[in-house]
Structures are given as structure tokens and as C-alpha cells.
Image (tube, rainbow, N blue to C red; front, side, top):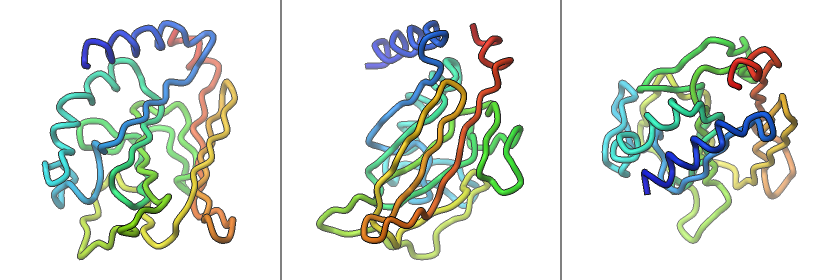
Length: 179
């Protein structure tokens, strides 16, 4: 699986002239407040540490832009994150724009529903990489993508209210430097 993934990411990175974004979808999350210590370092309560050890180096090496994750029935949005730390270069003051981020952005979009409902936390940690968590609203996720802008919106299913929205922006200078 790792050899296949590396070849796929390598090919995607080489094809950024045609498809500038690399978005990874995976079931088990690498970063989640459900599987980390108070310092934000993943543990194996939900296999997060194993996922990190297997994939994070590849995601950084091939400059993955966005990682969409599931398994945990909450919504969690992270700052650009690498090696257990938020990488704040290019993050706007309101945390809604990441311009030319220097690490992947991770989002758990697990609020579509299920027989067990949304996960309820008891005294969750608050690691530096977490922007926000929502476990109160069932929702859908909408991605809007252009060659220079990727916008993700978390929309409450019952009302259509947008509970979170952020953008990743790539300047043309950054696109040119990755070619």
C-alpha cells in the first residue's frame, strides 16, 4: 500500500501544471483530539499514531494540500500541521485563510451521521493544531476548487447553515516553484 501511495503522490506532484491540488481521502485520522495526548501528539487510542507513522512523511514530501478524514463522528479542522505542530506561516488572523501553507491541512468530516450519533467528548484536549471542533451538528462538506483556491464549507444538514468555511490559496509564484 505504501509503495502504491508514494508512486501515486509522486505522479500527482509531477502533474501540478494540470492539476494543482493534491487531496487525500482516508478513513482513519492522523490527527484527532480523540486520539492524542494533551500535547497534541497522536496516540493509538484510534490508531492515529500508526497512521501518522505510515503516511505523514509522504504527505509532507509530496506537498499534499488537504487530507479529508473520517472514522471519528465529529468535525475537526486543523491548521496546516506537520510533525505534531501547527505551521502558522500564511494563516490569516481569523483562521479562515491559509495562503501557501507549508504543511497539509487536515479535516475530519465525520458528521454525516450514523446509528451511534455524533461523538461526545469528556474533557477533550486542546492541541495547538486544532482550529475548531463541532460535534453538535450533523452536516455535509462542500469543496469548491479553482486552480488557485480551494474552499471547504461545513454545512448543517437540517438548516443549510454554514458552521465553518475556510480557504487554501496558492499564489502563482508558489505554483511556479513546485514545477
